[in-house]
Length: 208
Ligand SMILES: [Ca+2]
Ligand SMILES: [Ca+2]
Image 1: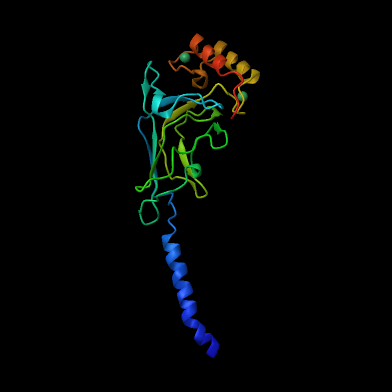
Image 2: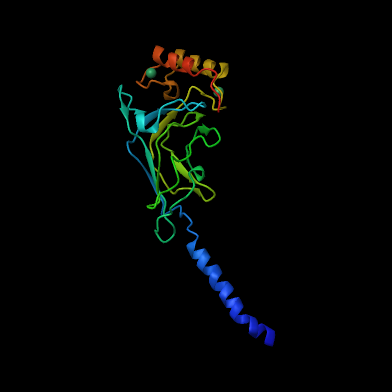
């Protein structure tokens, strides 16, 4: 009993230190954090080799480019900015989009304001055109975010991260059949020679 009394101040100080470090460990909150897109409804060509369109130079589908950079603002449960969150632990995700390892991570760690951007190319394949773009915060999960509208299309039509004969057969079926935004690589509402040239240029592409 005397020994327990003697240790009580030690125990209290250990608990106090633990609480202080827990308060200092800033964890992103999925509801308080949010993402925005500079321009909604643009189209971005995605390739496993990472040589598609940059998000900050997306296609507007009327012959021009538009900035479609995604900006992420990370906040904790108390609306404090989460600074220094690693770039590799924040990535873009969307229904139908398949990415190479680290293929859609942030440009850099979150800054003192909890902010980072996604402005470069995406290493990946598949097709996503249902405005389901979102940001995954590893290991916490997807943001409670809706309405990030970006069409992500790829010469890797089946999303196996290789552009090969399988994709070419799919492309030809679209070319001779019903229009699909998924194969409208130079997006203008029609599948034509410019789109053929794009899949030809990326033929054989794989993840790095
Ligand atoms: Ca493929
Ligand atoms: Ca086209």
